[in-house]
Amino acid sequence: MAQLDPTALDLQLAVPKRGIRIGRIRVPGWLALLLRNSKSRTGLLIVGFMVFIAIIAPLISVAHPNDFNILATRQAPSWHHLFGTTDQGSDVFSQVVVGARRSLLLGALAGALATVVAAVLGITAAYVGGIVDEIVNLLTNVFLTIPAIPLLVVASGYLRARGMWTMIAVIALVLWAFEARILRAQALTLKNRDFILAAKTSGEPTWRIVFGELMPNMISRIAAAFVLVFYVSLLVDSGLEFLGLGDMSATSWGVTIYWAQVNSTVLQGEWWPFMFPSLALGLTVLGLVLVLAGVDEVSNPQLRTEHKRGRLVRLVFGRAAA
Image (tube, rainbow, N blue to C red; front, top):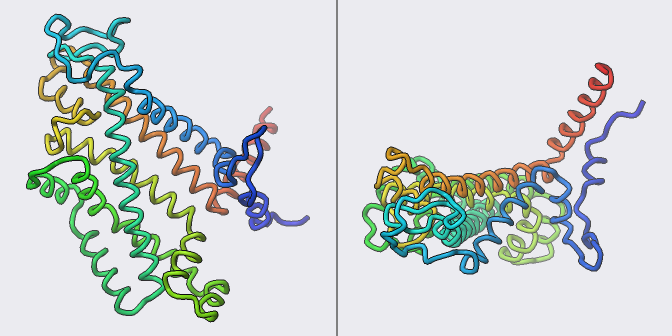
């Protein structure tokens, strides 16, 4: 009997070059491949829902998130205030939906910046080699050696301006090194492939090979790096704000949780100012983790093969038990 060939599965699940048409809409091949995976499909739905809420936040918020109303303080969730109110009478629902804008935007931009820096430095170092590779290795080793959380706390504590762009730069500066090491290792496995050698022989410049040949063939790993740094940035930013090291005048999930902790709302039996922003943060991180797991399964033939074998084993033993 013929044995199972993992490369055959890889070819069958390859990304359609022209995408897939759903009605009159043509879905890109990479998106169609992710939608076939149950984990990434669920994660995309969760993240898409949170992004949609952030977009329409001004339309669905019932009040300005920082408005004080002494006549509506410490109210539990109700039809008038879906998520209750704070000690100052601010509407928690408005704080959560409006805060989604800053939290998601900061996480996405920090993830994008860290991923771009990691991809450019890691892939370029792997292809060029020599002194460039040694310098990049030295930088990554330095940033990987320094504990990330204490570095973030110290850097945020000494910053006078703690606006969104400052926090994006600080978080990206701390998180780029880990992904640069991974992308460099993958680029080293590709630099001696035939298509890279052919491009080099034909006289293509280094930047053209790096950006036109290596990066497009590493897009799945780069996408996974972005998703990973995205949700880590969300957690890091919320954690810094929870410690009072962010922009406390902004409206975000971390700031809402910070004020709930400062006012000891949970100890007073007022769980809603703390629970709802925490739930929104946790749900978003869960969605990104599911997307990351789906990307790993789609881009790794071994994981796809093991997943199919696992389903086959469960099917066989399930029928045998029946």
